[in-house]
Structure formats: C-alpha cells, structure tokens
Length: 427
Ligand code: CMC
Image (cartoon, rainbow, N blue to C red; front, side, top):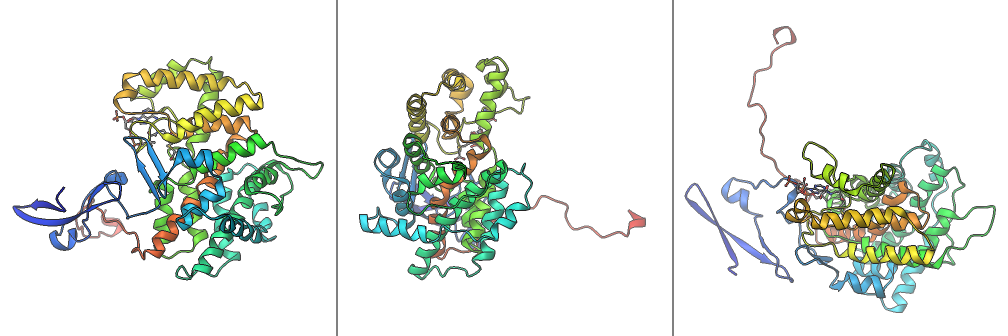
C-alpha cells in the first residue's frame, strides 16, 4: 500500500499522506487539504471520516470484532469485572490487584453527593424522563466542583476520574428514586460498585435489602459490554464538547443527551416498547417486519442495524446468551423474549434485512434482561450511560492529553447568495 494518496482537482494533482493503524485500517490524512486546494470534503453523518487517532477501542464492523485496549470483548465479559475494565479503558492497562484496590477506594472517597443537589432534583416533575434529569444533574455537578481539572497533572486527573465514577452512579439512580417518590439513597462504601447500583436503586428504609448475586453478575457483564464503542454519537459529542476545554462533567452531560436518542442508546427502551406493542397486537412478528420494510411507514425495527457492524454485533451475541441464562436462573418466563427470537429469526432470513446487512445490535436483547432484573423501562438508557461512562472519560482524557484542536467542522453553504436588505414596507 502506497503511503501517499493523490487527488486531482481541475487537472492539478495534490498528494496527501496515508496513515495506517495498528490493525491496518487505512486513512488519508487531509489535514492540509483546504490550505493546499481550497476545497473541503463533504461527509454527512461522518460515514467515512475519522475524527482522531485513538488507542482505546478497536472495532472491525465487517468481522464483528470489538476490543478494548487490545483485549477481546468476549474475554473481558467472561473473565473481568466492570471496575477493572473501566481502569483498563481510562489508564491503558489492566490494573494490578493493588491498583484496582486503590481505584475502588478512591472512587469510594467521592461517593457522597452534595446535599444541595437534592434541591435540584426536587425541581423536576416526577414524570420527567430519567435521561433528561441525569443530563441536568451531571451538568449541575459542575457547580459543586467548579475547578476544572489540569489534565497534565496525573494525580489531579486520577482524582477527577474517580470523582466522576463515584458521583455519576449515585445521581443516575436518584433519577429513578425521584420518579418513584422514594427517599434518595446513599452509596454504601463497604460494598462493590455494581452491588451499590442495585441497593441505591431498590433499597427501602422500611426493610433490609440484599441484591440477587445473579443480577449483580449479569449487570456487571452488561456494563462491560457497553463500556466503550470508539467514536459513536455520544462519545464524539463528549470529545467535541471537551475540545473547547469545557470541563469533564459538562462534556459527560452532553454525552448523556446524545445517548438518549432512540437511534443510539435510547434504542434499548424503544426495543422493549416495540416488543410489548407487538405482544399487545397479537404477537404477529411478520406484520411488524413488513412495516419496517415499508418505505412509506416510518417504523423501524428497533435494535436492528448498526452504523459500523455489517455482519454481526459481537455484544449482541453475548447478550442473547446472557438473556437466556439470566431468565432461566431467575425463573422468569417472558413472552416478549419469544417475540424477539421470532423477529430475529424472520429478519435474518429476509432479503430486505440481508441485503442491507441489518443484524440485531446490543440493544435488541439488553432490555429483556433489564426487565427480568426488575429495572423499569425508562431506566434502560440510564444503565447504558452508567456502562458507557468509563469510555466517555477515557476518550475525553485521550483527546485532552493528545492536545487535539477544537472540533469545528466546515460546511458547504447552499442558501441564498448575497441579497439587499429591504425595509418591512417594501417586502
Ligand atoms: N429497520 C428497518 N430498516 C432499517 C433499519 C431498521 N432498524 N436500520 C436501517 N434500515 C435501512 C434504512 O432504511 C436504509 O434503507 P435504504 O438503503 O433502502 O434507504 C438502510 O437500512 C441503511 O440504513 P441507514 O439509516 O442509512 O444506516 P445508518 O448507518 O445511518 O443507521 C442505525 C444505523 C443504527 C441508526 C439504524 O440501523 C437504525 O435506525 N436502527 C434502529 C435503531 C437502533 O437499534 N439503534 C441502536 C444502535 S446500537 C446502540 C448504539 O451503539 O447506539
């Protein structure tokens, strides 16, 4: 492969360097394109544009490969745990036992959220969607932690990472407690991170609470599977906002908003609502497949298709198996699981889905597990956000440490050319 790409515009040739990644992806470096040619590239949705060079996550959509820092998602999901994976993503290496213990203890140092944050929560109606509340609360954390982190100082960065991991989990669960009208719970520093998620969500002052270990294990795995996914919509948002040197909480808050949409993380809620609708409508999966294929019908098969996976989503494979395991160990029989299986089976044989490489994605089965665990549907995307948090932090940190320039795309203007202003009585 040549390390130079040649571009011809109006009979004039220009040369640009070719960058090859460690897994042999090829990119044409057009940093000097506009300066040398006067032209820009146009790539709506950034389907062909790399925004950065990153050493965090490798993804091969054709072969269905996903690796964090070189470790396969299958290995990490079966052998590691969420905090270890978080450390790996953020700091680049798997922690030693001592490093992991220090990480967990430093997170614990920051699990108390300022009491005045409760006043902010009180201002929301009970009906507010938890993702909207979470984005606002994350942003509000900035007010209580106004000093922005010096990314060049490893100690400061380490503390900021642990502070974000500690406080975000707590406020994420508060969005649910608010909706339910329950008192807000505190993190229990004698327990683990994922166990704490369960007790923060479900423990009531009226009695003891012990989370089911099957659920804690499954959740840990789900968080790992969601922990990073290179330059997806919410992560690109976090990097973009952070590129203006806005703080970590403000950048993460923007990521939460980006994740909320049904084409991204909001799909897990949308999948379950879709499956419930099909069930209510008599359980005819084929009818909904036909709707998804009908170009005059805006309906899409939620949980199907992916911008980069064009073969299969490796996360979906692991989650499908986990759904079976969790449901059987919890003794739950869920008819929507059968509808999901029927939909998947029919879609995988259907020419429309086959020709467009549309396969089940991570969200197709995750909602079924969450439901079996007793997590309310509106909280599904919040769980995605908790899982994605270490990825957002790692990407934000990488962007700042690499001193990336402010993100500022260009455009091709297609509006009116210059016009003379006319006063109102002459228009
Ligand atoms: N149902 C029916 N048709 C679909 C679907 C779907 N779920 N997804 C894509 N298509 C069709 C689309 O209509 C288009 O057809 P045509 O070529 O005839 O115009 C073709 O497939 C290509 O679709 P696209 O919208 O150009 O693909 P994209 O890469 O821009 O979008 C996507 C990717 C994930 C937004 C899309 O597949 C989708 O809307 N899926 C449903 C929502 C979903 O499950 N999102 C979760 C993604 S995984 C979690 C995460 O990481 O965010």
